[in-house]
Amino acid sequence: MNRGRVKVCHICEGHSGACRFEENRLDVHYKNDRLLRRFVTERGKIVPRRMTGTCAKGQRSLVRAIKRARFLALMPYVNDSVR
Image (cartoon, rainbow, N blue to C red; front, side, top):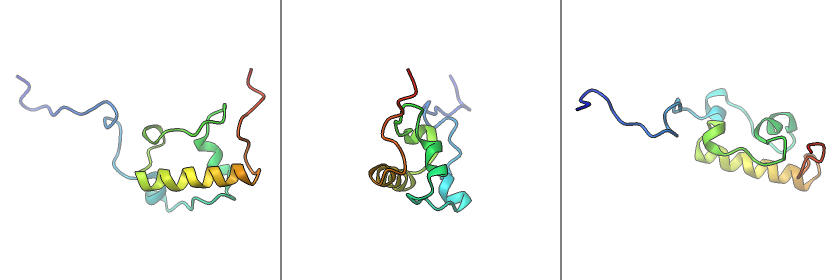
């Protein structure tokens, strides 16, 4: 039997427990495109929460800012250079 070991799911295994935006006091705003581009893949997809290391509240504000930036043409919806 594994007495001293606690089972941890593979998603929570590397998670430190602190949100990236809350611990660094980052402002997620749609005009800050340099920050937002770090959370979008080269194809233009929004990176999921388990990969970004954000809490649910931080991920919601991140997605909202990315969608606003896309709507205002500050960020592309799709990157056409990848083929």
